[in-house]
Amino acid sequence: MRALIIGRFQPFHKGHLYMVSEITNGFDELIVGIGGAQYSHTFENPFTAGERIFMIARALQHFVDTRGVKLYITPIEDVNRNSIWVSHIESMVPPFDMIYTNNPLSKRLFEEKGYQVRSMPLYNRELYSGTRIRELMVNEGEWKQLVPKEVVEVIEEVCGVKRLKEIVMDDK
Ligand code: ATP
Ligand code: MG
Image (cartoon, rainbow, N blue to C red; front, top):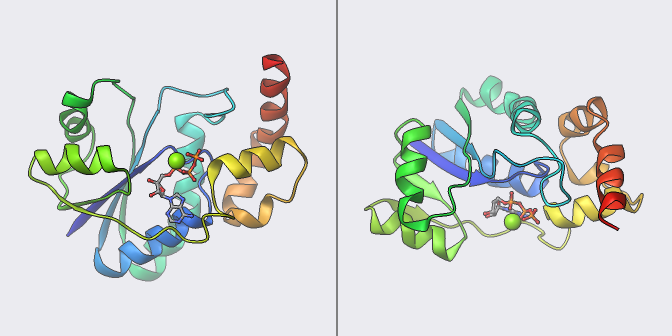
């Protein structure tokens, strides 16, 4: 059985990791769709699709090694047209049996196409939120414990915090 999750993962954090951990208890194949794949170098979307693939592949490798999970990571560009969103995703990812989403619009669009949709309780959302983590990065707060250690390594490798601070300065 193959499940699909979609997010922007800017960056991939421990809330996302919790979600993957729960899903891979029931599914042996997981597709991670990286939404907004064309965006990078903004406060909302600082990391490229390639950098996000790198973060997620490294952070999830232990599920592959220890649980034998098959993992597919696919960038998905936004199309900004809700009526074709599901077909667009279908054209980009392997076939899937279940989609996990908490977003009501996304839930509706997939259900209209006949998919089974599940939602997942958010894990410590007051701590684990992409927006909050990016704000901490800009303001020199403690962000590293909020993301898997492999994600810290990738962000350091691409000088992600420096990039984010410069992007925010440009906007002022
Ligand atoms: P941003 O603040 O940038 O929107 P985010 O934390 O909401 O970041 P997304 O990439 O937008 O992260 O989220 C993708 C999906 O991950 C969401 O649809 C949500 O269901 C799930 N998710 C986000 N945070 C958590 C969390 N703390 N626990 C479990 N799932 C989460
Ligand atoms: Mg979000």
